[in-house]
Length: 242
Image 1 (cartoon, helix red, strand yellow):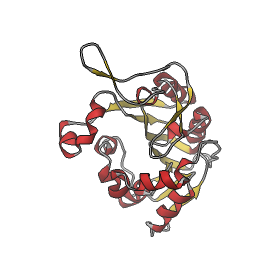
Image 2 (cartoon, one colour):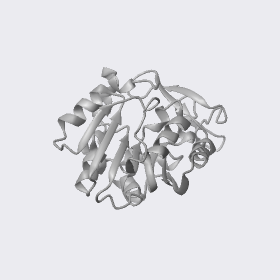
Image 3 (tube, one colour):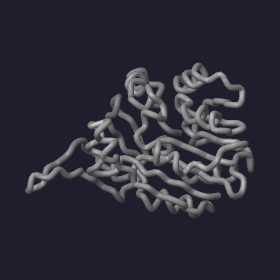
Image 4 (tube, one colour):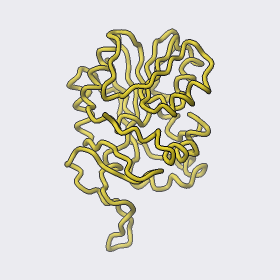
């Protein structure tokens, strides 16, 4: 079972104040790159894994989706999503993605934003998603880049020429990594890039697109705090076909 850190009061308060939590998809600098990969959702049945406050679920309905099922482990996140949504065709459910069971061949599109790095049994979840999708469906998700997650000690180091470097410790050692982000003791699951992609391929997905996202000059002008993301990618954007 994944750690339910989002129901930690300190973490939830910090998360609620993030730019992407306040402004939704418009506050996520990677959103334009994700949007370009999302197919026409008109009449589609959509699943949102780790739906959070429901920003994507509502966007999907506004863009023609017939129905959206959102799942999240956090009671606080689901409560906020329900409070902010007045649409009977969006259903939010508290669920552990490590144990999630989905109806077979019931969805046309699957989506997930920065949630899958909390999942312990990634392959089990990917198999469940594959079974739940209809043929020719697509799965688009973002996940923390393993280069970003691998460090076991925080902060930059400086090399002999004064250049900043990121201390990537034990990249090939997969498993839980503990970090202090918004609260102490946040547990994420480190998997090498090949492990993530090969799990998709093994299950039967085809890799359509992989982007190791970094901010553009326009992004940096708007949000200077993103400068560190030019040094190493914070996330991957993956589009896979069923």
